[in-house]
Length: 105
Image 1 (spheres, rainbow, N blue to C red):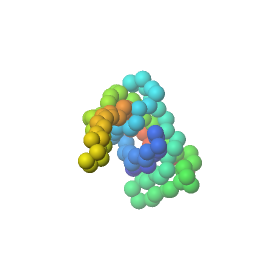
Image 2 (cartoon, one colour):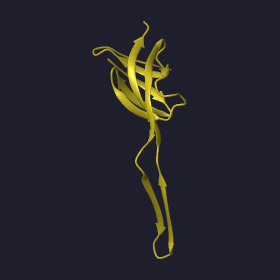
Image 3 (cartoon, rainbow, N blue to C red):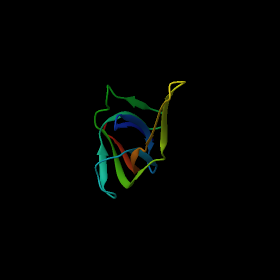
Image 4 (cartoon, helix red, strand yellow):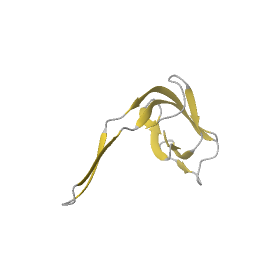
C-alpha cells in the first residue's frame, strides 16, 4: 500500500514503515503529524486519485529528527566582465517515519 502526499509544496510517494526527508516541519522530534493532503492512495491493485485530495484519507507520520542537507554552491559569473558571486545554501529538513496510511471508504 502506498500514498502520494503533499507537504511543504512538494509531493512524496510514501509507504508504511518507511522513512523519508521532507521540508522542515514545525514539530518536535518524536511527535506525530497527521497529513490529510493525500493526492492518491493505492492498495496494490486499486488506486484512488483525488480531485485534488482523496476525501477521508490520511497519513500518520512520526518526526524522527531535524537536520540540514549538504551544501549546494550557487556560482554566478559574467565572462570577461569581472563579475563573480558565490553563495551556498543548505536545505533544512525533517526526517519522518510513516506509521500508518488510512483510507476511509
